[in-house]
Length: 267
Image (spheres, rainbow, N blue to C red):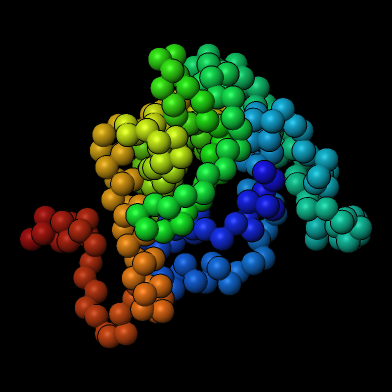
């Protein structure tokens, strides 16, 4: 199923659901914002296509030459002639290097080889809400247990950095892993949670690669977020009200904890 057909499915996906962690108002705003910058996630999208489908889709972009500035007459004229989204030359050359780095990583390669289903779409009920997901790749491990893997690009693939990214806004990869694991488990009719792995590749040289599986607390974090988001969704639908996260009152604002500690130490 292509992306366009997937987007037409009337169901709650992770990208929208995670906004409910902030507020119903932010969720509604995203629904109303139908214009998306096609270059925002261009590098990640192109890397996914190259790794998962063996397709080089860079021809779907106009490649901006090195050193060209859109503030110059030449640059403005070049940009005005383009009918495709614009991608920088450096980013264009980065894509195959990131894909090659993953292909050369032994564990990442084994995971990808074990996942025969790519861009696998699932639509099912989760906690009373019709949800959907488009999983990068689905397959089995060496013990024939079902699971899935997601490819993530990052400025830093080291464990401490990626751990923080998993649990922080706007990424919430812990929630995404649980959203997908729940959908896959229901789709397959299995009781135990399917395994999940993140294949992380850096988007700058040396394009380091790491593979991570969520441990117990990461899984618990994802479960709590999924339930919080879907509970809020059901509450908002029932009340036909999508409130924001901020109060309409004047509230006292204290210094952050680190500053309070500094002040206490200065006494």
